[in-house]
Length: 106
Image (cartoon, rainbow, N blue to C red):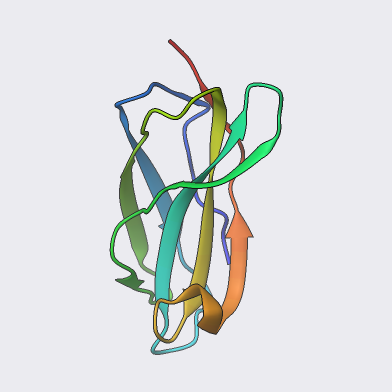
């Protein structure tokens, strides 16, 4: 499962496009993607923004999520946590991935 193509930087209030080019995906799966954060000091903050409703995942297709970067105290970076499941729910995941960190800039 790809980890998603993301920009290197983002600003609070900006929508971040996250592009997944899917390969070798079993039929009937859904892709979900959410933003998770880290403080400026690198401490994990958990999920900071739900990404959108899960989307149908199909080999050979490109799926894009547009996720708004919201303001959180001491937010230094975000990354996209994504997963594939038959229901779209994390508890039912069959694969998961994490994107590169996206630095928050002014």
